[in-house]
Length: 96
Image (tube, rainbow, N blue to C red; front, side, top):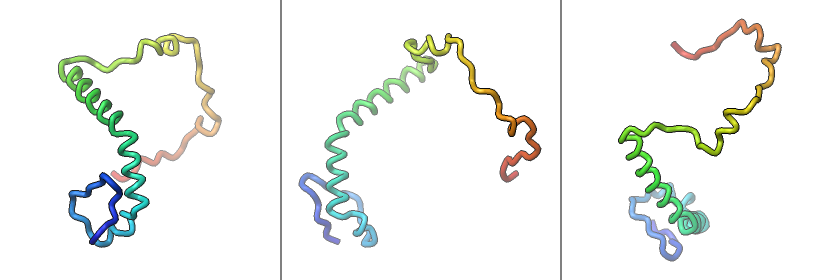
């Protein structure tokens, strides 16, 4: 199958003939545009993820952000339980 690839786009995996409608020029151009716009940030996030995992592996525990402490320390309440939930007679838990 011969695809019309946008400039700079390579597909290195085998391509099945039934994928041709999905791999249209427009779709490939969109993916290329998204990749070019987001790749630098994606790489930053992947590096941060590796660094975060290293800290967790070294024993650091996840915690809340310090700048949100006022929310946890605040005086707030949730809405009361609706009357329909006061007397539940059926509990569906799924397959056993």
